[in-house]
Image (cartoon, rainbow, N blue to C red):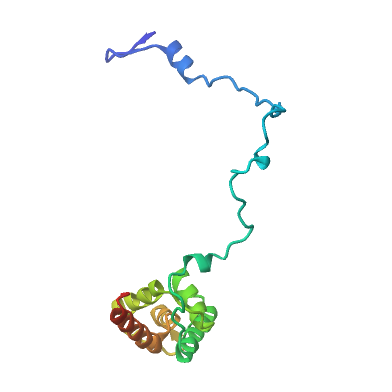
Length: 167
């Protein structure tokens, strides 16, 4: 034990014992077998069901039957946004880029995706294209979401969902 000037007593032996890791125990490689009178799990009639190897998650997660198919004008605008983003290497992050790809391919969007688009357009006014040959990153993001046609379409879809009680 050591005593310090401030009156603290330190027991180094106890400290070292506490800090010593427990001994390492090697795992056993013994294989246990069922007794001959015990049925294996595969032989039991109440065994857990076997699941398919692949499950189509889109069919499991989709709550709507038809979805919302983007119009051609929205698809073209999103495609322009993707081309500009590729050329300039800026504008838009993960979600807008993923949404632009869905819009470009005219894949049906869920109600939640339409709500997300409408919220984007509520927060962001139409973006100014920028100066000359260098469009602003905001303008690129605006195009990724479908631009003016995307805004109009999202507003129409939100109104239709509100009438149907989905919004």
